[in-house]
Image (tube, rainbow over all chains, first blue to last red; front, side, top):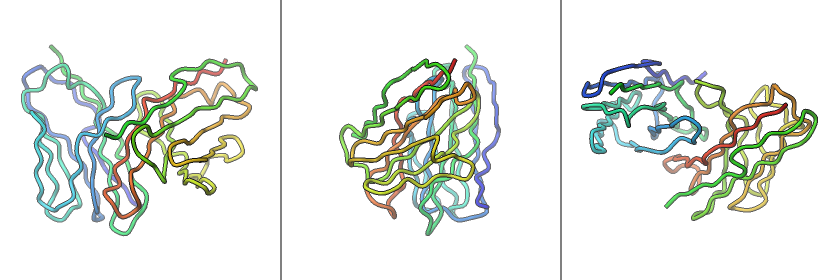
Length: 111
Length: 118
C-alpha cells in the first residue's frame, strides 16, 4: 500500500511565527503537488514539484522536493491569519496513474 | 487557466430522493475527472475516477449503483447520488486533470457541493 504521511496533522501558531509541514513516503514520486483548502471550498493548487532537490517559492511559502523525490516540505515564513486552512500534499508515484493525498495539515494562525 | 465549476454548491434533499451534481472544466478539456468525498476536518477520500467515454472506476467500498457517474464529454462529469440517505450527507468535490497520464498529474478542483439529506 502506497502511503503519503503528512505531519503535523494540526498546528496552531501566533501570527509572525514560522512553520514547516512535511510530506513523506517510502516510494518515489514522479511529481508532487501542494494544495490549500479553506472551509467550504475546494482545494487550490499552490505548486507542483517535479525535480529532486527542487525549491520553489510563492511569496512567504517555500516548497522543497527531496533529492530522492520521496519527501517534500512546505515552509511558511511569518505566518498570517490569511494562511489559515488545510494544507494537502498529493503525489503521483513513478509508473502510477493515481494521485495519493496526504491526510492534511490543519493550520490555524492566531492574530 | 484551469477553472473547474461545480453545481449546485449546496443542496438539501429528502431521504430517498436522488441528487445530481455537475462538474465542468471551463477552460480546458479533461479526459479524466475525479470525485471525492470529504468529512468534516478530514482529508479527501477518492470515490471514483471518471474517464470520458468509458465507465468510471470506483474505489473499494464505494457502491457504483448508489453513486452513478457519467462523463459524457471532455468538459462535463456528473455524480448522481441515488436514493440518498442521511449518511450520504457530506461535502462532495470533483477535480479535473489536464492532459494525459504521464504528465504532472495536477488536479484542479471544483468548489465542492454540500449535500444534506434530511
